[in-house]
Amino acid sequence: MKHVFAHMAGIVPALMLAAGLAGAAEMTDSEKQLYEAAKKEGSVTWYVSQTTTEFADGMCNLFEKRYSGVECNVVRASGQVIFQRLVQELQAGAVQGDVMSTNDDGQMLQLKEQGALAQYAPENLKDMVPVLRDMADKENYWITSGVSPLVIAYNTKLVTEAEAPKNWSDFTDPKWKGQVAIGHPSFSGSVGLWTILMNDLYGWDFFEKLEKNAPQIGRSVADGHNLVVSGERKVALAPLPLILSDSILKKSPIAVVYPTDGALLPPSATAIMKDAPHPNAARLFENFLLGPEIAEYFAKDYRYPLRAGVPLAEGMRPLDSYTTKSVETSEGIKKLPEIQEKFRDTFGI
Image 1 (cartoon, rainbow, N blue to C red):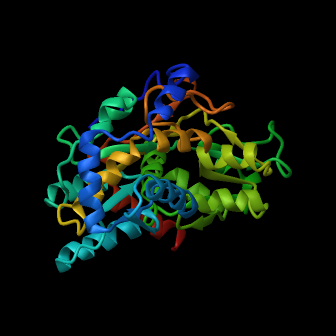
Image 2 (image 1 turned 60 degrees about the vertical axis):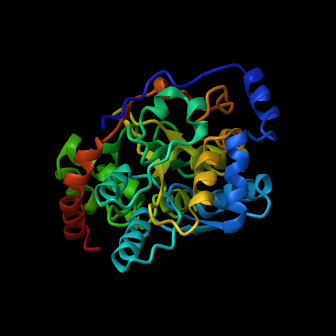
Image 3 (image 1 turned 90 degrees about the horizontal axis):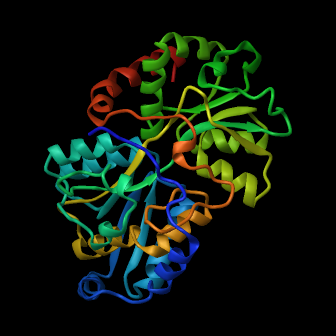
């Protein structure tokens, strides 16, 4: 599956957003039927690495508000931790999660090949931004549930705009020794893809030079963002939505650099497990992720909304206004194990 990103921004005027949200309270006939079946199941369990715990909790709260009587339970961890948990459940024949969301669609391909995913085409697919809809599995085993570019963050109290790195290779500059933060490819799916991209762009020499700068390595891709906000590190690999929401909404001392050698676009993917304990609630939840409430919720948090007709938040750049790169799904699956091993050997963790 080749990921193609183009012409996503400025999708439609705000009037269309108002019209879409005005109809959010009305359920379609198929949605009503699914809701009634979901109420009998009582709950849905969502395994997620796609967002922070706080943001995922907010999405579940919106789901429960719309579908009273169906509880939404969040199990949030880094991408590899969630994936390994599911693999263990599959091996034991005791699947606990109903729905899985990840920043690494290579994990979805592996689960699909194992026959672990349910085939389902949500009703709300028809209202998605076409380029995002087309990034999903063509046989409807998973949907695109987000796109969160990985960019460079810097602390504005400690680094001027002129001093900030302009591209990823700047992370290896000796002036950033002890001041860089990144995630770990063995725990974070999106960091795994970023590591593959850096190796493709610069060879493993990039990481050997980076190791000499003694970077702080966290499990989650969000860890670097938090270290920059606190001032413990000056620059970091971080998701764009976290940077923008903190800098604009919370007035935190953090700003973004769109690297000239390309922001990584790891598409988030969501799928329903074939043996989901609550299959109807799972379908209801996946369809809800593509609905107007979540689209508005994304936009308010400086994320790219999935639904056509929802304008970007003020201050958010269209995807086609800066350089982006992606890693093909099959390439990621093939390269990741070796990349993870080399990373552990180089950094000793």
